[in-house]
Amino acid sequence: MDIPGTTILLLVLAGFTAGWIDAVVGGGGLVQLPALLLVPGISPVQALATNKLAGIMGTSVSAITYYRRVGPDLRTALPMALAALGGAVGGAALASRIPAELFTPIILVVLVGVAAYTLLKPQLGATSELRWEGTATHRWTAAGLGLVIGAYDGLLGPGTGTFLVISLVSVLGYAFLPASALAKIVNFATNAGALIFFVPYGAVLWGLGLTVGAANLVGGYIGARMAVTKGSRFVRIVFVLVVGALIVRLGWQVITT
Image 1 (spheres, rainbow, N blue to C red):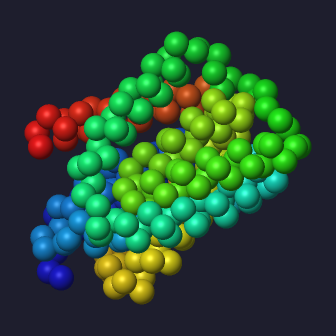
Image 2 (image 1 turned 180 degrees about the vertical axis):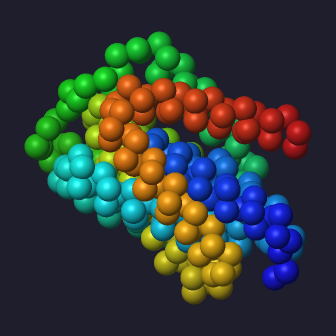
């Protein structure tokens, strides 16, 4: 695939930015996937698959950084991640069959609700007040959330980390920083689940994905360290900005299609 130098530079910049956003609060696909779709001759499925390869490189380093510095509870992370992986495999299998346009209006409505809920509750996610802590109910709820959001990630992708963070904050009672740390582990699993389908399908453009992924990895490392240093208030601010950007992008997509 012959890609102009200016397009490669744009993709590297998009990969770095997406990695930073994903590490802090999720939603890097808002930047990275549209950039990949600018590549001449790339199909939507190839762009989605290559986005997963680049994304997993960034989420791996940010997940490790969070694990070392925040110590997320693996009793929540592991069942949620395993369920999300299974959901992502199923979602990816449907990605080439179901038009994404069918889901955009629904996602837009959900995001508007998420934004309103977050803004109307200024103390949301400031501190952790866990629900059903240490019980099977806590773990099963985490797994159910992982399954649903994992299926969405395999099917479409952009905003997955954002949905993971808000579900951990609003449903399970985590503060924004530990929620973001948990979300990185789960997001790694959803990317892996999607790739389990996309790699044998032959949809991944390896050279392009590894190039964008290297930039995503650097952005993910820097973003995770910033989030850990600045805490939940910083993560909340970035979360609101990312949700707002997602609403604008999807709203424009609905209007123009």
